[in-house]
Image 1: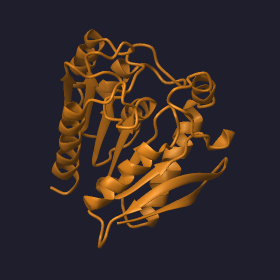
Image 2: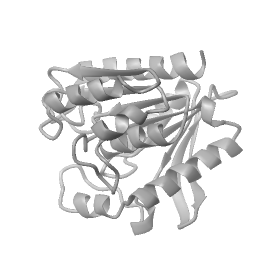
Image 3: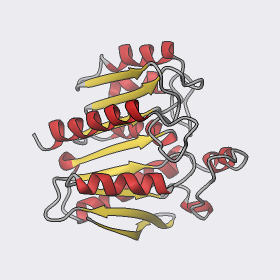
Length: 238
């Protein structure tokens, strides 16, 4: 596995991104959509882990218009302004630019997946509505009832899913009530593609992030990652 920091061209200028490249020919491409804290070392590590599994993984810095900051987990003050800098148009441009980069690397939409964490989980479902990709996985993406970034809520959007989609949520997540998750499950089940939701009774928001000891749940994270890899393998390489 090799990793590198690269630049992807967008209509709004260059966008930094972190790439994990597998040894040998990739099974496909995976877009890794950042947390609200930016392209953190955790997000970079996830591209490496995907590369170790044979995927060409790329994490675009969606905050590139404000300098691509990486924010501390224990200082929430700058997080909301950073998230507020994103719009439906800027997100759409950055995802489209990343897909074009992957296509130039030999990975078409059918052989591309997307996985996102926190706000990136929301972006993942939105992208899975906008594009027919190989597979998509959302980790604790919010905005289920009230939309974010100028998009409708995920419950409203989910019947339009065009990409096989897996959602992973923790029941202890104060920002995403289990009742909302169940409403999302019901709505997503009406989509014309395969969907699935898994809830973890003892997991909080951010349960996959081992850089956040207060919320990291080793058991839930391991199970969720195994399911993520299986979802990609089952839909992209099958």
